[in-house]
Image (cartoon, rainbow, N blue to C red):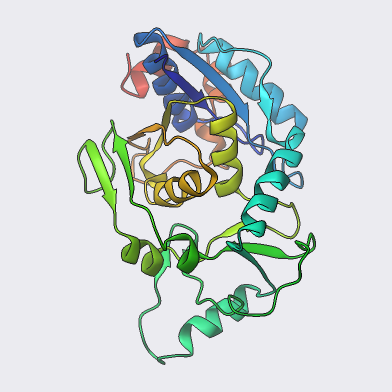
Length: 286
């Protein structure tokens, strides 16, 4: 089977050393396996995506010496794919509309046992299921957030994935997921935000399946989100790819780099006269 990897940045700011590391890891793995390397633009959040940042992404990747297949998939061009996936889940009764805002969730999560420790999952505070059992219309609403009903989604099936990198507190190999633990520690995640009609979790699963990605390479900070994606792949009949979670690039204080950290933007290093080889050495790939 041909190895297919991808680098999927969001055009919402400048690429920094962490992006360079993620892109090079995905590209190097595909090259070593004589496979295919893809670039995908994750721009479902049209309020923050900017064309000049997308242009900068391609410019920086070319400067790093990376080569990828074209045409590039842009999420903003595939909202119909995400809508189709939501329709399928709605018809199966696996998603429900939610009218809660952040304050509602915070208050509901604290209500059952005052003073109890709140649980946080991949999406922050675990949703307490406030809207789960409310009456639903036959037609899927397009003006409300939609959540995955994990209680129904996890009724059957076994869930696992193969890790080829090193996720937090685990080694490479087969990672088995416990249904009770997923339900307790993840909760009913949002699959469609009311302001964009989809979400990161839904889009990334649909995109990876559509593009035939066989190995997902990404930072260890997304390790916990993988359990959501494995469940969605199971529900939608997609094959689960291999996963390769890698280390994060941090500053001298151990803080994860962010797009607002312009001092470590690739464009800044380029203007200072550094080469692509210098960057690879800085991120430990030289």
